[in-house]
Length: 81
Image 1: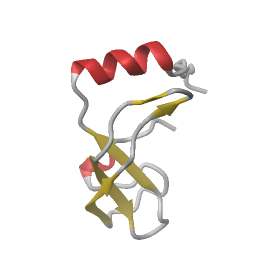
Image 2: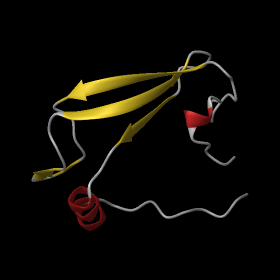
Image 3: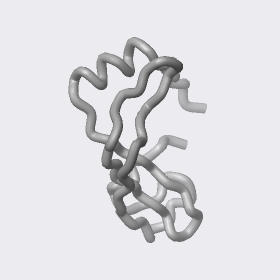
Image 4: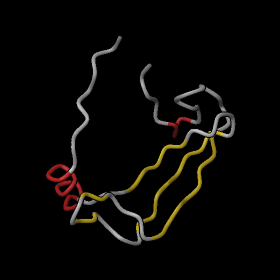
């Protein structure tokens, strides 16, 4: 199953149509030992009221994207089954 961006209003897991958008903020970040992308980040959080699945989205600048590409393990796309 392809993962749909829940910003469409539909859950990518149960396909329910009761998706809510909220925000989370705090000292969060993407971590790898020895580094943190950002502190005081604000995330957009989409939550399905039917099954509870959540998607988190964060705005990233080019410096943060570069850090992510260098430090994090990339998950390779899988062929559809």
